[in-house]
Length: 108
Image (cartoon, rainbow, N blue to C red; front, top):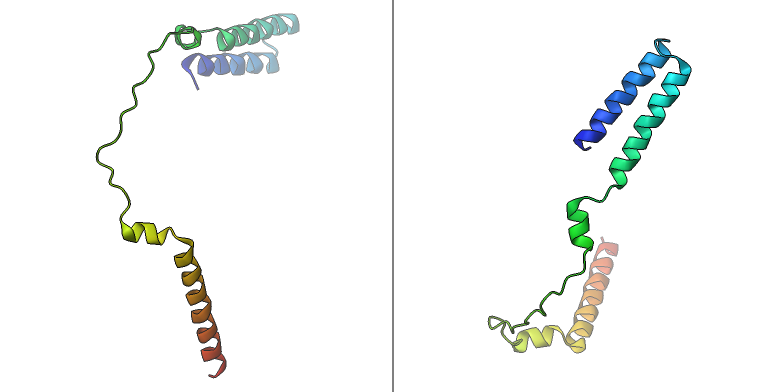
């Protein structure tokens, strides 16, 4: 919470407590509460300098994209790991290992 929100909440609590203890006239309570809530709405919706600055259109320069020199092209192993044949082989091996494990447990 912002500082002003905290203060507004404290003032509203004091106002509610005063009204509950009958220290305030009901019309005065309504007037003060309405005034406080209106000030909260104004403060929350008021465009700040930062909001105005961010919303203002600017002519930004076009970024220059450079090629990263530290990246190496994929080697043979990386290319093989991406191939569909290796994935198929790995899936078959996993299924075979699961089958052997299952049948090994069933003999026990």
